[in-house]
Image 1 (cartoon, rainbow over the protein chains, first blue to last red):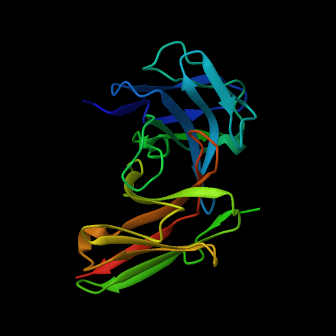
Image 2: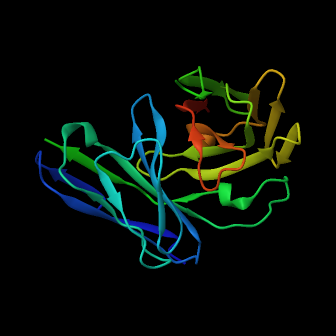
Length: 120
Length: 113
């Protein structure tokens, strides 16, 4: 199992350019999410999906689009890149079910290695 | 407004001693809490979690304590090892939410040999 994979690892864009960050998982997880990590800010949820064809907005969705046509893939599109979108982007996946500590394992998310994006 | 706070940006501990990482939250509707560990240039990896119906969960060297009245949780690592050196994030799930986690800003733990 490769787990959660992300491409590219690094990307430099000019302001106004568009691009797609790829994310794929081979664990047959229902749920997938995109986060961005900025210094001093922790990880913030951009968009998430609870299944193929179903997506919803997180805390910081502006400037990003997502779609989920298959269980495996969850691409993140930057429509018109801005310097404020310079960040490290993480994709995550999880599945439903109960954990031994009483919660649901939809909350135990498995992360990809990240894409470091710089917008000039 | 930061709903999950890790007020210590960094912590340094000697190998073999206890590491205690702290996390405070403001939303009483959080019902599940997790700790993630992150090495440089890698994604966060799940470490340990606790449901709001419990006050302690243990997994090997790692124990998480939850004090709901104080809205505080802590991660204890005993004994600390140099390989534990990483950034630790706490995260919380709002009750009734699916697939949504609110993360703290992280604490960089350095375990000195």
